[in-house]
Length: 291
Image 1 (cartoon, rainbow, N blue to C red):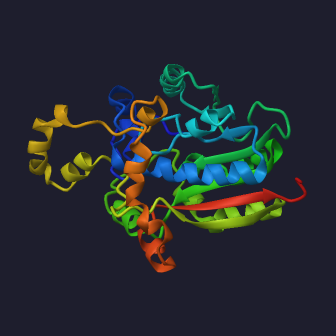
Image 2 (image 1 turned 90 degrees about the vertical axis):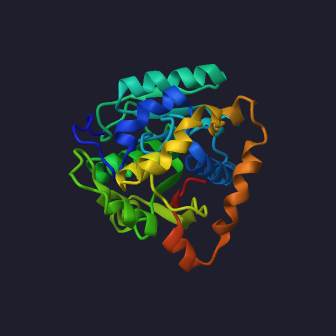
C-alpha cells in the first residue's frame, strides 16, 4: 500500500480521503449500492462452498469506510480475517466493528508476499478493487494458494468501462506502489490456472445507472471546475441524511437494502451494456480437488 501522496490523486481519491469517511460515516449512494450487490455474491458463495473461515486481503481499495467490506460475513456467522498495511486504518476500522459488536480479526502486515497464517487456514479468500496495491502478483497468488483451500472471489475495476476510462483522463501524476496492470484478468487468470484453480464463474457486477467516478460527486465537480454547482448542496448539507451500510447493520435503517437496490435493473443487462457501464468485474475460482 503506498504512503500518503504529496499530490492528491484524482484517479484514486480514496488514497487521501479515507480518513474522512471514519469522521462522517457517509459513504454515499454509490458505495452503499456496491456493498449490497456484493452481499448477493457472498450469499451464493457461502452456500456453495460451506464457507466457515475467510481472509480478505488486501482489504483497502473500496471508496468509503475502510475495513468493513466483510461485515456481512460476520453477521452471518463467519469471523473474517481482514488484512491491511496501515496501522491507523486498522485502529479506526476496529472501532467501527466494536460499536457494531461484530466479530473480526485484523492483521497488520508490511507486505502481501508472505502472511502470518498456517497452510490451508481459510475456506475462502477475497478482495475488492485492491489487487493494484500488490507489488508482486505472482507471489501474492502463490500465498493465497498456500492459505486458501476452497474458493477465491476476486473483484477488479472494469478497465473497459466508460467510467474507468474517464477517470483515467483525470490522472496527472504517478502513484507510488500502485500497479493497475494487476487488475487486467490476462495478468492473473493464467497465474491461478497454473496454481490449480478453476475459473467457475465470471461477469460484471456493480452496474448502477450512474457512472463509475470512484470519488465523491463534490470532488469530481471541483476537479472539473464546476464547484459553483455545489454551493446550494453545501449550504443544506446538515439536512441531508447520510447513506452508509453501517446503519443497516446496526438496525437503524433496516429499509436501506430495499431502498438502494431499486437501482439494480442493469445488473442483468445484456453483455454489451455491462461491458461498457459495469463498474467492476468478478471472478469466482475453485481449488481443484478441494471437495
